[in-house]
Length: 326
Image (cartoon, rainbow, N blue to C red; front, top):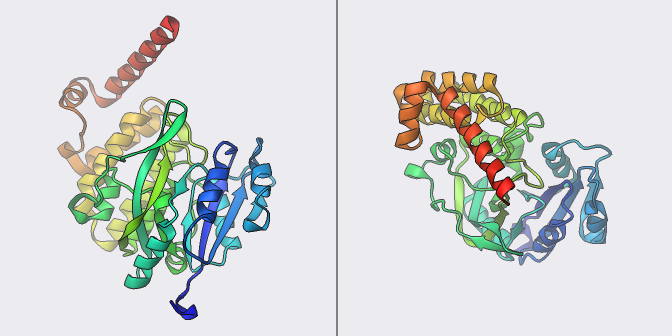
């Protein structure tokens, strides 16, 4: 490859109290076969040893520490400001990438002229004292080869498996710092709605750590801020689809997304849950209800809200019995 064809890749890692994993994430980037790479790590005012570990890598890492906790999206946006690469990856502080991942992703973007590429990926799950890679359970390609439909229906590719062109990122705007959840989904959905195609790389492997509870970067727990953020993302998607004249194509999928969110929200935020359920019926009508046959039967008899509140109380009761028995 000639010097003119070489493109710098910037990897941005936001980190908050990630001392257990940040070293592994950094080493996986520094061990990439592709060059040139710059690594930007923004510590979001961690209270553990995260900043100390980052500092141990010296000049191999461009690092900055926020004076106060500002959130993962602020840190990603700040990391992008500090970066100079033609392509960017946003790696979570607890994830890893195989040595050939960036090389494979850059190759497909350069050969296709695309703005967003995806590599293969797996979950990292804890088995005993070890973290082991396991199949994600997701098909390599989205349903009906439609990435937007796939994302709305719960199919996705994690940030650590995506490489963006800077031009694409600048075209869709920064990470939404007001969101508490589904921030990466919001970014990808905005790119897809703007007409960006995702190109698939044959090589590479991203390892996306899966926790039972909160992650070290983006929270995947159910909370009032998280359900309201996810609802806002769906609202933004509907507005864009309507503006493009393509809402009818995705109406049912969007309605089902609201329905699934309502099911979760009833455990923590009754008002948002009711709003999401209403949006589900408005968009998808009788096609909104998803889940097992037993769930749909019970929900149709007593209503989704009462059903989910009862299920939540039942789960808490079972957990309480297990803790007593333990």
